[in-house]
Length: 92
Image (cartoon, rainbow, N blue to C red; front, side, top):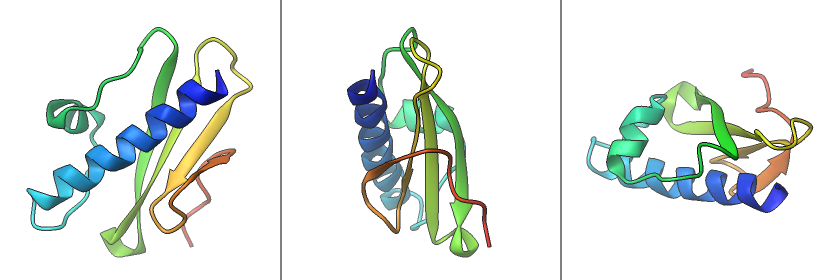
């Protein structure tokens, strides 16, 4: 289930960057807009928990989890560029 969560995060980050390109460099916190942009995933296995903007909107953190193993929670921060275990760090 780890791989599915990591795949969702990588795909969501790619879709976030694609959405940003068409929206003057802005990022979104709306999963629905990312889905409209082309994000797909198995809603029976994984979910996006949250998308937060960081650095006054110049970055983002996407948090996702497994619906099959609730102990699996990961995040992808745009300034890190790879999935990490745990929840998105608190905004400073």
